[in-house]
Amino acid sequence: MAAEKKAYPLRISATVLEAMQRWSDDELRSVNAQIEYVLREALRKAGRLKSGKHETAIDDHNR
Image (tube, rainbow, N blue to C red; front, side, top):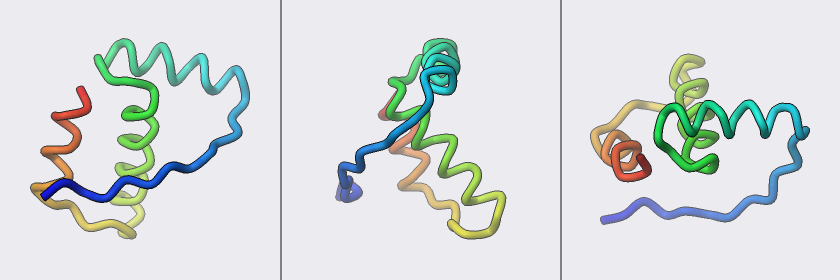
């Protein structure tokens, strides 16, 4: 079963967006997938999101 995705408008500075674009290009991800990956990793490190197999599969799918 696929994880539910919700659209969320994001205001972001041009400088940060350009840096995310370069990073996502290096990682072979879309900018959206890269932003979600970075947020998820930050949440895990802060102990606010549990790691799971399903999320890893989502990461691989977004590459």
